[in-house]
Amino acid sequence: MRPWILAAAMAVTGVVAAAPAHAASCGGYVGLTFDDGPSNTHTPALLNALRQNGLRATMFNEGQYAAAYPAQVRAEVGAGMWVGNHSYTHPHLTQLSQSQMDSEISRTQQAIAAAGGGTPRLFRPPYGETNATLQAVEAKYGLRQIIWDVDSQDWNGASVDAIVQANARLGNGQIILMHEWPANTLTAIPRIAQTLASRGLCAGMISPQTGRAVAPG
Image 1 (cartoon, rainbow, N blue to C red):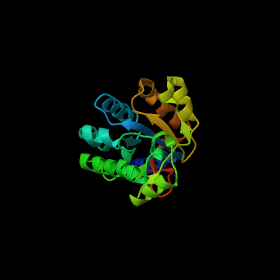
Image 2: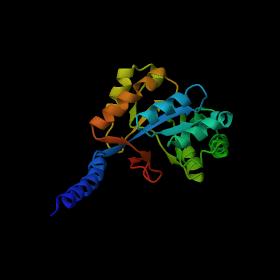
Image 3: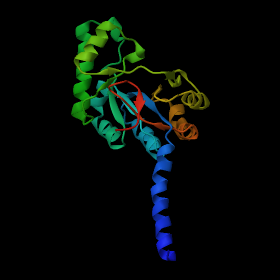
């Protein structure tokens, strides 16, 4: 075989081989989630950090904030994030009537859609509190309830190290609870990315069918 033909063949082979090697680096997927947004104060910095570190996440937005900051909802989508419903005012939903639950969920669906975030298919109840009545309302709107497997405790003053260590406990398909407002969470983002990569895990989407983290569609 002539040298230039051999070189070309090797080059082509190298390119073809590179793609599977990259794909193989994702030995599983985890669901990074951030509650309580959006805001002009925290959302831009969080999105920037996630994007710079090659991470995607599900943003569980409160309807009242989606209505107040629609540009940030659009920014979330533009940055490759997924937007979920986190109620309108973050109440203890299990203490409300069914009609009040319905209002909290439906108004948030409308606010997020109006802001350009699409119609959410995932719902996270505030405080992780749920019951059969709430689940019936969720089903009415075609929502999959998403709690979490690991609580980062960032809402409770967890250190940057503790937040990183919480992410290190994630296994394939599992979901972690984080929030967009703690400064330590923002600081932890680069180390979270490094930790997941070192374990062969990638940040995935949460499936509305199974409620588990999967490869982005």
